[in-house]
View 1: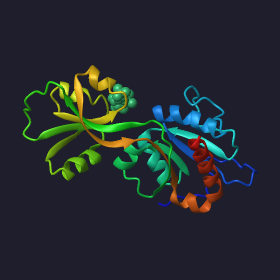
View 2 (view 1 turned 180 degrees about the horizontal axis):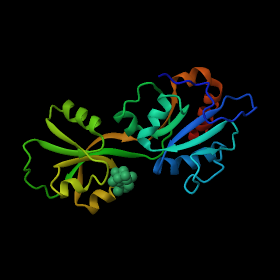
View 3 (view 1 turned 45 degrees about the vertical axis):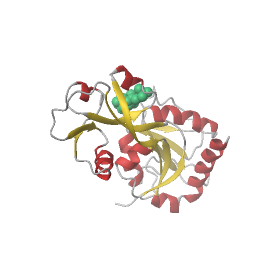
View 4 (view 1 turned 180 degrees about the vertical axis):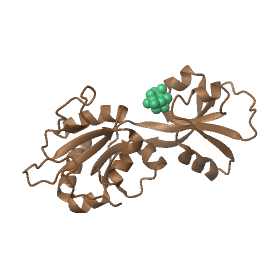
Length: 227
Ligand code: PRP
């Protein structure tokens, strides 16, 4: 299914002459750092996304609504045109294949790195092949394959740092920001795979059918990145 960009899925007739737009933002740190950026761009979210039970939030731009979804769902919402725009980490775009999305801007927020880490006191591995625990299985497989290393990649959904401590894996691939979580668990970073920040992405059909509104939002954000 292709994105049907002239839909009004969240249905407000704005009467502004601007096309309705929906912006999907990833929950958590990305949302926390996106809100001040939107404010600086002159866009206020009219209900607090951290306390409101509403899933579709109006903004001070009558034609723009915000939806807050899991980070892994942002590319899906945008690819299928259920959202025209999205804000999501580069880690997610690489892992879940950003095909079908236009990456408009590096917003420079929620910066961190994706890294390989292992116990500082490395135990002798009991596994025949190097075992890596991660939620980024595609990125990890590609990274080790490029190195010509055979690795067994185990999918986990959280608390990655526990895996080497519990003997589940030799190494992990996870996001590192301050390094505090690694240190607290006796792990050290051995290699950086990628530098990560949040990106503004757009649905391809929306880019054609709603170009005026999309460029207006994109330029507002780009302008406040310059200062
Ligand atoms: C992330 C990441 C690490 C931690 C790194 O987890 O998965 O566990 O932050 O941050 P640090 O280097 O500053 O300690 P997050 O708390 O976002 O939750 P998650 O495990 O659900 O991804």
